[in-house]
Amino acid sequence: MSPALSKLESEPLRPLPQRLLERYLLLLRLYPVLTKATSSAILSALGSLLSQIIERSRKRPGESKSFDLGGPLRFAIYGFLFTGPLSHYFYLYLEQLIPSTVPLAMLKRLLLDRLIVSPAFLLLFFFVMNVLEGKDLPSFAKRIKRGYWVALKMNWKVWTPFQFINFNYIPMQVSLWRLASVGMCSIQLPIYILVK
Image 1 (cartoon, rainbow, N blue to C red):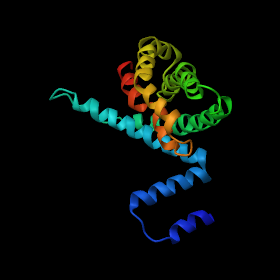
Image 2 (image 1 turned 180 degrees about the vertical axis):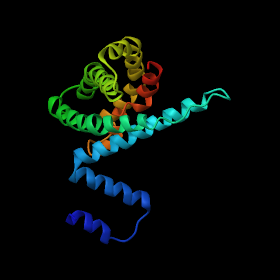
Image 3 (image 1 turned 120 degrees about the horizontal axis):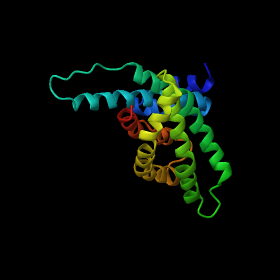
């Protein structure tokens, strides 16, 4: 066990949320990519489950639909392998590409994220989900035609204010918030389900 972890365990008891946050921040410092990948996997799986719960609540009486446990698993895989690691390196690169000292840095970062990164990330999302579902390229092309533009517009509408807050007020170290905003599940998942 690392000295930093054992130090936390020897301190007097504090409220559980405070201890969990301290542990999370410590893990972010010690194992940033793994911690962000795991966080993203959990958030993505929870987003998929929440989407299924919402979808089930909208069904008419008599219509039953069982939970698709493969959905949360696919989203967890995507979050672990793609969202967490890519977001980590994207934010590090963004700090170097557009330092805070550059005039209008936050606006430039926001525009780069929203107009270049988001469209590419969304395309990757659709492609990986297609692969994880075992579908072929024609079904991928069909899904892109039916849902990509709708999902991208929704992404811009919903996530742009969050990203503005992230770039202006959330420190890089507290990347759980940044990770959550990039997690995309809360907006792309319902649209993804609609275009299946």
